[in-house]
Image 1 (cartoon, one colour):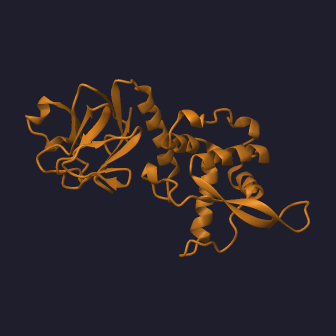
Image 2 (image 1 turned 45 degrees about the vertical axis):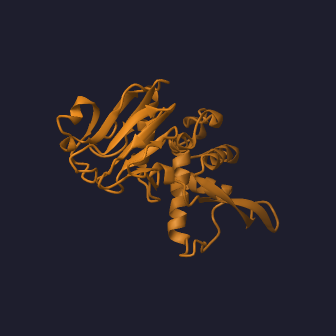
Image 3 (image 1 turned 120 degrees about the horizontal axis):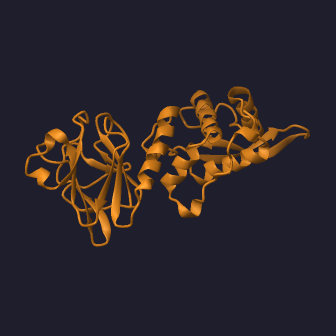
Amino acid sequence: MSEEEIDYTEFIDFEDSNLISFKLAAINNKVRFSILEILRDFQKLNMNKDKTFKKDPYYSRELNEILLKKYDINISLQMLGQHMKQLLTAGLIEEVPLKKEVPNKIGARNVKGYILKPDAFEELFLEINFLSDELLSFFDLYKINQKFHDEDYCILTIFNGADKGKTFKVHKDDTVLIGRKADFSKGDLASFAILLDNSYTAVSNVGKPHLKLFYKDDSWCILDEGSTNGTFIGQNEVATGRITPLKKNSFLKLSRGEGGAVIYCSF
């Protein structure tokens, strides 16, 4: 693939976005995604148990050569630098100082090597052995969510499982109950409810909805009154029985691991 065939024009305006948006947008590009794969593969092969490396991480010229040989991506070092800058700003990679022999220079030179950040995908609930198709689909779900933005609403998009891609608008005047279909009683359904597929087996099955979402005191809030498997914002478990305000662009996890539901919440 030649440099002319790749669209490099849509670099993010980082001042108008948030950290999760940075990461999703940074991933949604063939060159940057290929760079992340290269760095992932390097670390899988060369990282010791104490998090040190068996050999020096790649620097820009080495990355450029791998992009060409392995991915048929032919770009200039200057353009590569723009992509690296975007990955750095998104918090996906970090620089490490190296001394390397470089072409047309005598002796080792100070250069910057690149590695994945240890918590690169923490906010995206992803493991380091990510799958390309899955990651790129997350960006599509994020774009779906953003289409429905309105200052009077909280927008919820389900990011995994049988209901993946379903999006809901919750008005400030409404309280929404969230849980599996099988966990709702007739009385529950008198309220606005988001009925998750019963295949979300780790979502509470205690005869009541897992979670409430509502607007209170100028903030969107959630309340888990005692679910069996807990509710998490990012990696942090929400205290049961306590109203918890949400930050903009949060990932809600209704229990952890397989069988839970992951919901992207923006307002």
